[in-house]
Length: 283
Image (cartoon, rainbow, N blue to C red; front, side, top):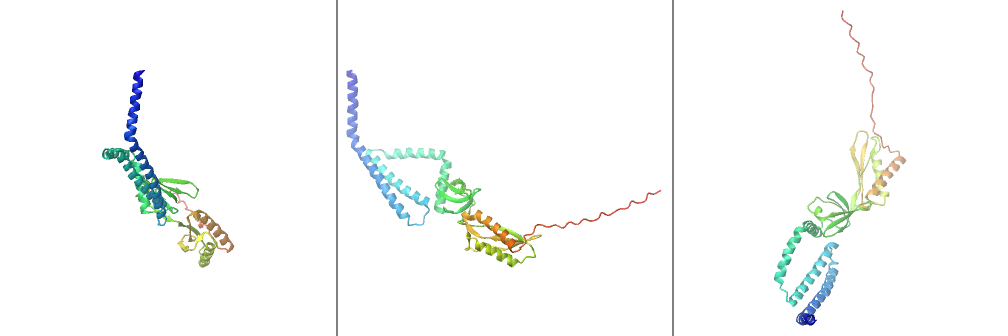
């Protein structure tokens, strides 16, 4: 019983001694970290308000704000460790070794991060633009450090890792696309009247943009038709719907104005077989 009381007394004395020796330093370290937290948050908000006045993509702005906050917290963390008497050189060496191991284990993830930084700062495309990349296409919804999200007209989403984008051939349509519609008319049709009719159809469609100007013209002299191409510009979200509307309007308006859309024709001639008389048999 006396031995247990002595052990408890020694533990109590040790704890009291540690509290006296390190308590003030630990309390000061906690105060330093708390101050660093509030300073980092205030400074990051100030930086974010300042960046709002610059033409900068939201991912880049968010990244810079986080970097500022991380630097402030790192500085105050070093101050707290120094106050506790921690040797920083062995700690930095240990973190370097651990970081090398983590980097080897997360090569794919780090590749996405570096590719994301390249996309954010070089700006090959922006949020809201329509792009085609890595066998996928769609409207850019979000750009993060790890991936880029595209939306399709069918309301589905495709998440493309950034490392699949960096170094690939990119087709950036921007925020408008050019619809391609082709219609064939007869060779005896009034070509000027046909082009005027198509232009009226495009003018009547509220979704067709007038700047840039639509392209209308005779594109090909085919076997039985003159191929008229119709290429108006529309917003990305109207691309599919406008093509359907233009096709419907062309058929209806051509019927009203008796403009023929001929079917393929082939002339087939049947020739009478040549009769070959048999030669008389020799005796």
